[in-house]
Image (cartoon, rainbow, N blue to C red):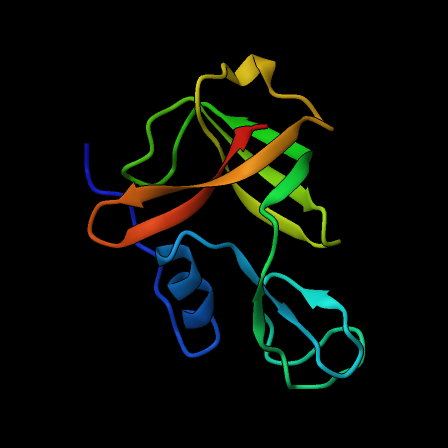
Length: 132
């Protein structure tokens, strides 16, 4: 199997990926309005402020929606796999694979999950989700 494409951190996303390497899930929080922002943004979509430091979050959430992928369009993905949007306890959504000892047909909307960090060869730790 060909290698999976690697994330490409930049000035905006590097703090997120650095937190992942420490085994932490971190999202931005606007210092002006206090709201959390994810996926990373240069300005708060709620108030327009640009002071958005990253802060660790619990890593607990529930599956908002998901898709079972049976045909990968990029190399390095073993099918089938489950991609999900997860509603975090902190009020934002995160994206990732549902992994662990669960069959794709067992994943459900509303299912509690917890972040885990899996090693992506050539990159380091990436966040995924396991049933809680």
